[in-house]
Length: 431
Ligand SMILES: [Zn+2]
Image (cartoon, rainbow, N blue to C red; front, side, top):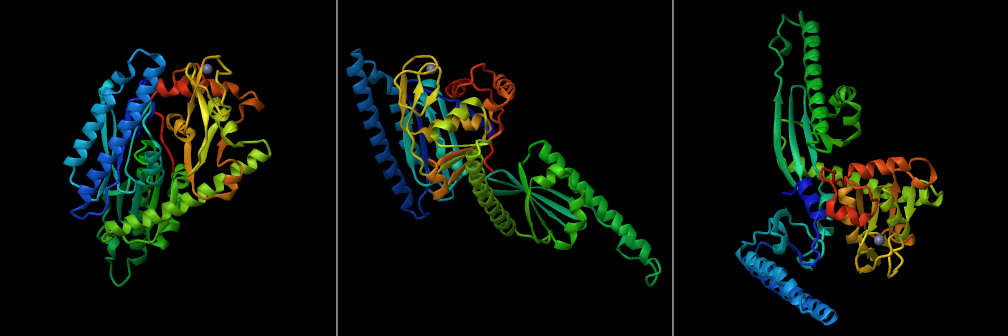
């Protein structure tokens, strides 16, 4: 499974000759024949990608008249052949999808398994890797912990990209006396108090454990499974940060809870929360934008806020299509299709898919990202909107923006600049 550092590495990658290859394989049904179908589809996609590359190379040769275009695509040709061989070698089992990012000219080849929930099999060759399918996947499957708790036991599960693993278990047995020794209730009250102390101690231990795990970023959000009657005792012991990152809870016992049960409860709670947050964020961005406050809508304003480092949460219509140009010098993105850069004056080139072009930036700058499906309100404001951390133009907070730019290791605040050399370690979060 893919880590945040690995995603950052992909977001930073660029091949100036346009030979960065992205391959997503979504397995078909686990029938025997399926594997064959996948290989046939991959071969078709490979042929099509090669055809496009060759026509691009030919037109660049016609322009430059030096015949270098053909040579430049050799690297992509090698990678495409390798992808076809890979699809032949793979045993289609329908369990995992696969993503491959490759550029043999730069000695780059990364393969990742993903949950088999991609929208389809794709093969692209371009200057950057195509990250939207990955970003959608990560938004749908953040890293979550599920804690099951009873009076003397706790179990911790890690839920990442659709896979649930049990990572920790605690058992604090109640003392013998605590279990109700004593003569006909003579010691009853005393023993009960003692049990209460022991349970409280156990709850504190678990609450501390959760707090520390969140601090270490072992996971980003968590979900609790426990009996309703225990919640009122456990809740006051939670650290504020842990309370805030608790997505929800379900009623569960601990010892015999099945993995499937835990997973389906957690996924249900997460997707309900996600849906709610997404809807709220869209409404909030639109209303903030109307009052000229901490929200912007429409491609032009969103691009501007991106470059200013203002964006906290970005919402993009799932089928958003937008055009822009990118400066070949400073990387500035402009929604006006100008031929020279308004910042530095150099030539621009056209970007066909802006939603894809801004992704590396969103990933490296730790911007929360939502893909929004069929939202008429968002559609009405251009199908793209953002919630801002601040508005640089309205106050003296510009210095904050500059500070965060420096912390990424660059002085320049332009989008494209970050693609090549942003410092890694930024968090990717789409929960
Ligand atoms: Zn420029």
